[in-house]
Length: 197
Image 1 (cartoon, rainbow, N blue to C red):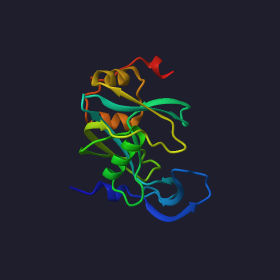
Image 2: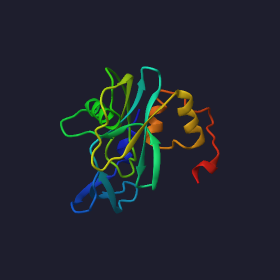
Image 3: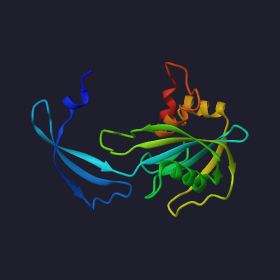
């Protein structure tokens, strides 16, 4: 079997960082890359970040611990799974445990790794790790950061699937994690496009 990646790989010629780009979650990098097909050189934007985590937390009654928060990119409040960034010195499981506790007040003693996805490999360099927390229980009040406002909502599997079907829940990383735990949709998936307007 041939290595298809090597013949498609672009050559990195040089990298420039823009330290004062005003980005909070990312560091802006411009790579000068040579196209292997025609040898032309292009500038390509990369937004560097630490890895992310998101969690599907199922409580002792079988409900999924979901959150609602305002998202500045889309300009409205979204329904999603808890998640966040992997801090320095943490692995993804430690980050998942910390983020779940901070955002929701829930903890779990039973964690399962569900794998990782590339949030947007076109210009992001990191992974988002998915974790399942089973038998989750309320351990403390939320400990939100100064820039956070999060509401916790418990949903059973039918409610989660209904939110996906209606288009209310459309956060890509939350859908990716949830689809590793629940049968979210029949194939082919369809929903009323009026929910997106």
